[in-house]
Image 1 (cartoon, one colour):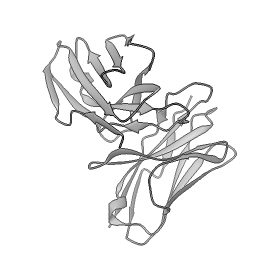
Image 2: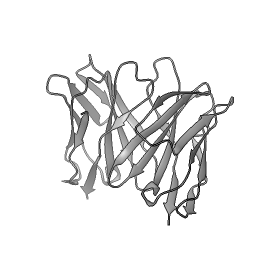
Image 3: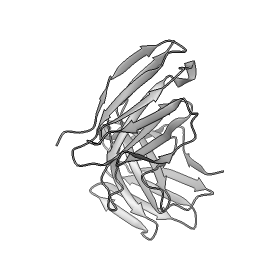
Length: 113
Length: 113
């Protein structure tokens, strides 16, 4: 069955360091992979989208890589700040799936000052 | 532009009752998706509506239903509530034509007693 795995353990890092979050998937051939941020009690907020034929995408301090051979995406936040503390969710969408996203369980990031 | 709005924000029901949740998408967005989020199962896709038609459906029992109106507003209904239906119900809207980003509302927190 299709599975999307994110590290369920919280990731604790020091302010200023680079945070790296992992999203692995099996039995899936996504056309798109998205990353969202979710704060407690709020809905997810879109951050970045990367297509299956793209290797890397950047936006300000954020960088996403997508390796369809390894079936893995890495999400990096450089020069992390305490305000980056949140849960980060990866979501996959297949071809012709409309807007049906399948989400991973999310990884909680804690950036300590 | 106003974001996605959901009403009510909080709801307490008892087992066996039914509930209707409402979602108003961002102006101009024609696709509305519904998700259920629980600590154990994470964020799970319920269904997606586009132009008043259900386009995709997740793996939920028939007690979960929805509809979309001509102004793109959507409602979801859960009948014969069970304790396990306690969750955060999120609505997300998006454009069509290759725009894959989903914009989430704040959610409705449902507690079933």
